[in-house]
Length: 69
Image (tube, rainbow, N blue to C red; front, side):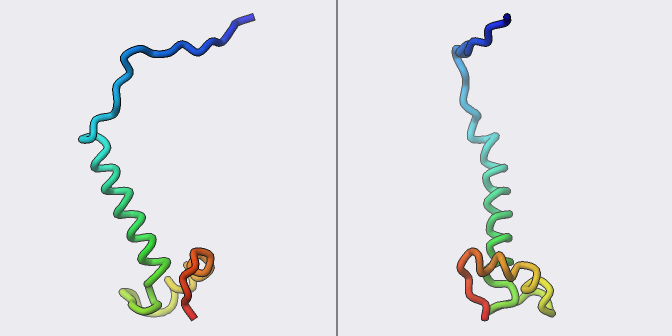
């Protein structure tokens, strides 16, 4: 039977900040856009006409504690 043992890797290196920074900025931007649509769009302020976005995120808005009516 083959034994599986954990073999530690010596000299492992961390990911450089230059590689992480663009993805961190992108993730933050996506999170802020999501937060805007769930919290504000067609509530106090609206970029799009109609109530389509509001109805699409309505349950998520209440789940996260944002009042809308």
